[in-house]
Image 1: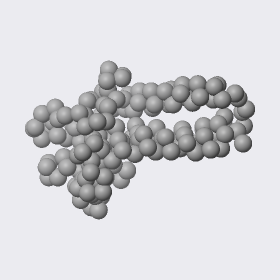
Image 2: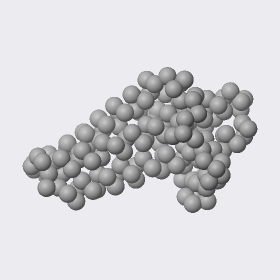
Image 3: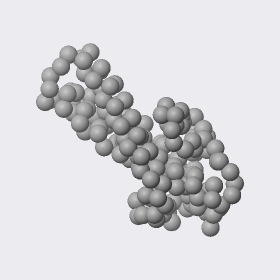
Image 4: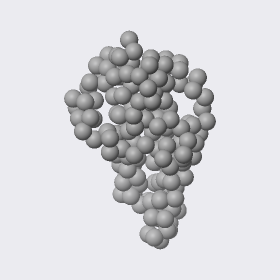
Length: 157
């Protein structure tokens, strides 16, 4: 049972605006983080051996077939580093691209976190729909970032 009881039309409107707010706020927040923050090799962004330089994501999810259909968030904010294609083939270009995949990955992990808040004003079933939305919207993008970074890191090394 939601903490706040509202008519269905208001719940839908609040859901739409809340998701828009969270997505934009988190995106802007992550865009403000300096590139140096993502240059560190932290455990969170490590491409693990079991990912086989991104090949695992291709094998399980056929990433190459659908990754081009994902809209790059930079078109909405008119800022950031577009990841639809490489910005060059030099080692430094590849390193920057790989680093920017970490920014995108963090943005999408953080974008999942607000989902439980929707239980405050949504009926229980709709709260679970919001959780499902957060996962279905963000996990494919996270998978693409890990796939691309794994491939780039194998090229660099």
